[in-house]
Length: 115
Image (tube, rainbow, N blue to C red; front, side, top):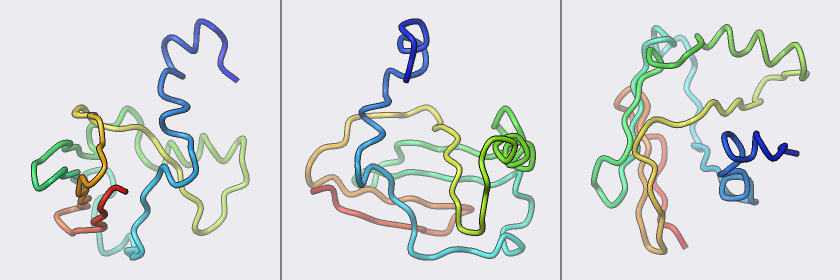
């Protein structure tokens, strides 16, 4: 639960991001060896065929291995577990009938229509 101070800075989007079905996960998983340098991967989100968000793991504050090491001090991580780390600039409202498409290293990972 967020304190009143933290709520203003960190938890402002908690309810907006924490409902059932809030996260899209690709049906396809990629072997990490196919991706090359995990600390230099591009990812994009398109909304209705317009680029909405664009990022790269090289812009993250911590490297992926550092995040896994830190999180594993507090939680037991198993194969298939997901760690959500944040989002690049470009957050916007999602409306019914919007089509969202996500890419990782130029490879389309999902496409959904919002209902």
